[in-house]
Image (cartoon, rainbow, N blue to C red; front, side):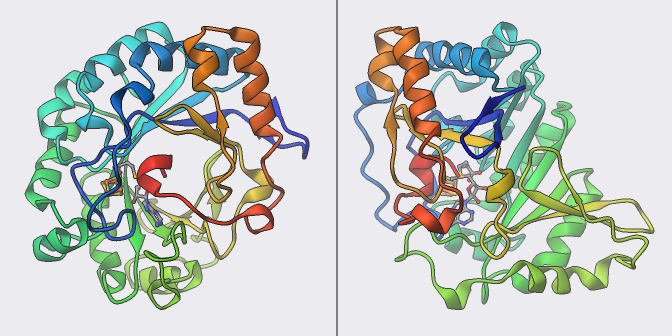
Length: 325
Ligand code: SAM
Ligand code: SF4
C-alpha cells in the first residue's frame, strides 16, 4: 500500500539518483562551471542501491525511478537496470535521461523491461539546444529517442521545462513532435531550486502554458479531460479529436503537496522527503553497514520531515543534478 506519513499521504514512489555527474550543463539545472563532483566512494554503489531498494519495497514503495545527474554516464547502468529488473520483477521501474547516450544503450535497456522512460526535450532547435545544455548536440537526443522507440522501450514521455524567452512559442511544435512519434509530451513549470539559476521573468505559469497549447488541440469542455495521473504530478489534457494527451506539471503555481507520494534519494544516499526542503537524512552509513533496522528507521525519520507544503519549510537550496529532479 505504501508508507503513510503523518499527514496521511501514501508514499509509494522513490526517485533514486545514481550519479551526481552529467555530460550537460543545462542552464536551469547547473551553473556553467558544473557542480563539484562527489568522490566516488561517497556515491552509492549498485549493490547499495539494490540493498536499499529491498528495504524501500518492503516498506511499501511500488515504483522506483532512476535519475541523476545523467544516469547513462554511470558505467554499467544499462546492465544494472537489467539485473535490477530480474531482482524486482513486479516493481514499477523507470528512468529519466537526457538521451544523449541512449542510442548506444537503448537495446540493452530494452531488456530491462522498464515501465517507462522520461526524456528531457526543451527545444527542437539545434542552436538553442546547444546553448541551453552548454555541451549538448541535439542530434544525439534525436537518435537516442529513435533508438528507444525502435527497441520497444514503452511509455516514453518527453519533458520540457518551459522558460519565457526561450521556448514558450515552441511548445506546440514540441507537443506535435512527441505525438507523431507515439510519445507523451509533458510541460514542466520552471522550478526555483537555486535562486541564481531561476528568475521570475523566466517563469511561465501553467495557465499560460495551456493557453499556448490551445491552437493545437480541441480542448473543448467535453474533450478537455483534465485528469490526474495516478501517483504522478502531471495533469493530463486530452485532445477531443485524437485522444492524444499532453501533461502539464504545475510544480510551482499549483503544487500538489497534499497528494505527494514521493521521496528522493541523492546519489550520495541522502534522503530528501521534499524537493524544496534541503533537510536531508543520510542513509548511506546504515546501508553500508547493511543494517536493516537503522535503515528503516532513517527512512521513516526522513519521511517525518516531509513538510505539509513546499513553501512551509522550503529554502529551495540544492542542484537538481544532485537531487535528481
Ligand atoms: N539528466 C537527466 C535529464 O535531464 O533528464 C535526469 C536528471 S534531471 C535533474 C531530471 C529532470 O529535472 C529533467 O526532466 C529536467 O528537465 C528537470 N529539471 C532540472 N532542473 C529543473 C528546474 N529548475 N525546473 C524544472 N525542472 C527541472
Ligand atoms: Fe544534466 Fe539533466 Fe541537469 Fe541537464 S537537467 S544538467 S541533463 S542533470
